[in-house]
Figure (spheres, rainbow, N blue to C red):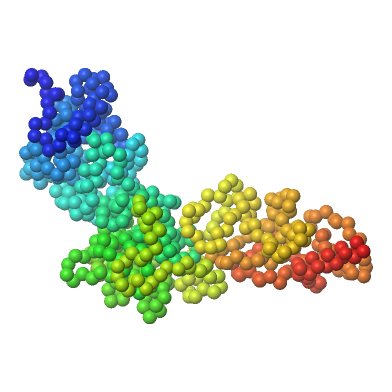
Length: 626
């Protein structure tokens, strides 16, 4: 009987009969996978590596922790495992040694392989760890989001940003008890995540932890930072979201502040707004400059309305991602205000822009319509006090802005519901209309819009294969130009004479006028179009015909009469026997031109429009037939 230790079951377990049955089934399942464990009915180190396949190192540390705690080498009995799982899954323990431990404390001790401190509470409260030990704990927490054989490296930048917000010195000694306290405060959703993580491993449940997938690449965000935000801002709509959809990025969209506001309002979604501020410092020992970036933002749980009234709810938050990771929740004291969010573009008597934490016309975060006037502060009456950027920085130099729509699982039903969700009566008068197309750049209302639209990077167009632009899935402003990637210099396929009720023969001639050869399209396009610059912001207009390429058509034999055709010294077009200089169609704006490197025919005197040319051609044709 004394040798049957491996068959013992917990006598006073906190698991109910159904849970205990499931645990035994899972334990037996992993025992049957290996020859030695199948015979002795215990788990080996390899068993734990298979259980935690996405983080095998944590599986080895878990095995080592249980090995020391159970005082048995090279194998783990089920009763030892079940006692530890009581703390990680249930809210209490049937073992006196473990009753005073919570999930976060036990998880951190497993990560450090420090089971010896369980038996001595006094040593546990005076336990000191190094900076690297603390990074190890945070990395194991971030790896909870992984599942299956999804082997990924954790972004240690995210771990260090969180730890640096708690302890400023990398080389210093960190108090373990203080670290656990801060983890419980800063990562409010961590305890529930650990519980669910262990359930998926030892109850064989489907993975329930959802990390929202971004529909395109982010310049400021990755999955580790999203997971940290989910743990910290666990009361926001970000928790449980299935997708993040890019609504606006100043690196992608050319519409500026207006387009950003239009996309935010039309989406009707909760939003995650990210900003990157750039600060340049002068070096002390040389003349070089040091550039430092700060990444911060806010989460709004409600849809947005273009009104000068405060909006949002008491679950919104603002945060700093880098260089320090901190989330500031709404204040809960009696003096706190509820001015969480603000959006105004219509009322000129009040500040126009997007803000968070309104306090007497001052904002904690302010994105002005004129980007150069954006500001940031360390305190307000709505959110907890603390720095988002360095305390001395008041005026923002925003380099990157990203706005992401947060899509929850039931978004399909929410989209169908067109009612205004906010219960405040003053919002009921506002309705959302489809916005007009963004105006031409020459009709910009303010210098702010000019700044936003001209701040963009140059668009690089691929010439081979299928174009896979960064903004394929983004909601761009109309018109949405489709580029032909087979051309040497990509050019929108536009015929200014389309839909002009021309006959088939006239349409063919008009196609030739704009460089479209019906028999060899791509080759003819390359002969006539050499370079095109088109800004996405402008409304599309008909281009002016300006033929600068030398004629390449074969000479068409047409009987000419001296009465109707007069010779000139300038070169003739080979089809009509005359010069084509320009049309009477509207000219392009300054950001929509067609350039060429060859000599122009604009210097000739006998100028005719395209309609006149076609009319002359028909007249000559009828005379020949006569």
